[in-house]
Length: 110
Length: 270
Image (cartoon, rainbow over all chains, first blue to last red; front, side, top):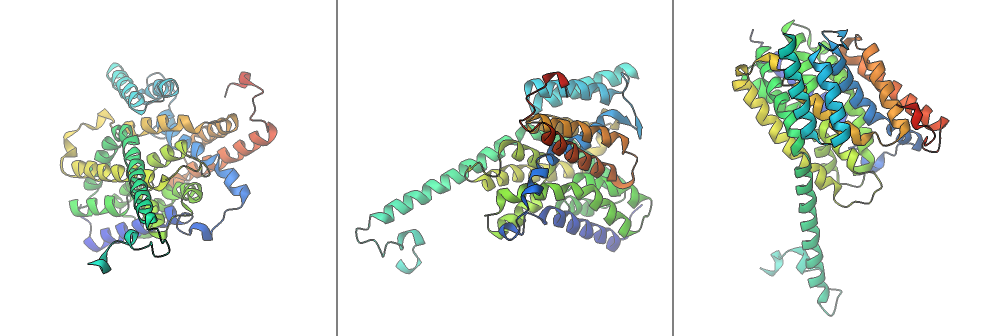
């Protein structure tokens, strides 16, 4: 399934360019670019919303459908891990608890 | 020899006593050591993140090779693109023989969240010289972004935040590339059903908590989570952007409706 070399590198180059530009668009102009106060106010809410939009589907969906169920290992592990995160605020403990529960539920369900 | 002496020793022409040479050298050394401190603090701060990143990098490495990229191309992709979720998003399209532009669009849409990160980070690094701003842009990823924003505010006056960011990001970069290499060359040894990549999501969960600093933000975040489920079937991860937009709107609305930090109702239970 090897892809033509030029095609693969064109894909990589184009992705590299867009990935960089999207990250650079507000940071690189520096002091030449001042966002209006309203926008910075709006951006207060964006980081938490973005993380939630990454996390929640990964926790509560399975193969494209809603899977809020006790036999979905990701969901059970996600709920436990979230509780651990709230209480401990520790990344390591959150990952450990989540992966342990994930594995336990997977073994129990299968 | 004198002509080549460092600038700190040649700037005392206006100072007849000659004492400022010493003072400036001291200050410079002090500056350098506090920059190094910030760099080290940043590097230390990301170590817990690595538990989520290593498995995710290995999974990305495996996926790139199994989609038909050579190991050079796969490693080139992880170095040049340095955006794990976009890398993973284009692979099924690559396998399906999609045209280049479709893959560009898909990767860009998945990466659109970086636009938000860029806007959030801009005020922190506005005063830095442009090479710093270019480097910071290239190095921005979810984990370090969340950690940094949870720790600093744009006008907190903390010195050397750029060094903190660089220290953390470099560790992230090196470990990410190493994990991708491990995945490219040896990842097939790890059973897929272990779902190791889930560790990355769990790490983001822990990073989310300090970002939920007031009730309006919590409302926004809950709205974003709900909408992300409802919109998950939209093509190319567009649902994520819809969810972020909804979260921001709900957050702003909540802060307008209860301007004083909404201390009013613990009973609302977000």
